[in-house]
Image 1 (spheres, rainbow, N blue to C red):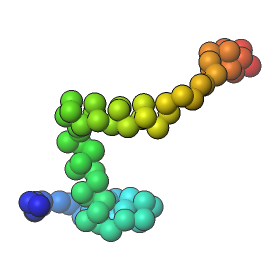
Image 2 (tube, helix red, strand yellow):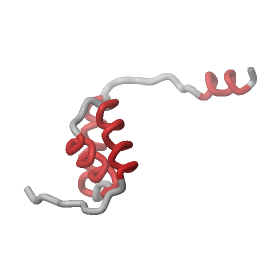
Image 3 (cartoon, helix red, strand yellow):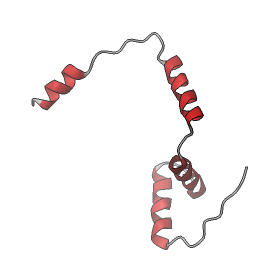
Image 4 (cartoon, rainbow, N blue to C red):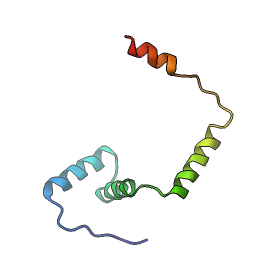
Length: 76
């Protein structure tokens, strides 16, 4: 797996990233990796695979229409 080195980060950025890592129970490196992965996004094939997984996970389940609940909440 390739590595990446990011030079020249200011102290405040590193401080915020460390705090974020702590909140999420990850190391600084793990948090930076997660942020980069999210920023890079997914390609169409990965999105399709993810959607297939969700379809399988929820296959056969029925969900109530939430429109009435939303309308009720807005009217409060």
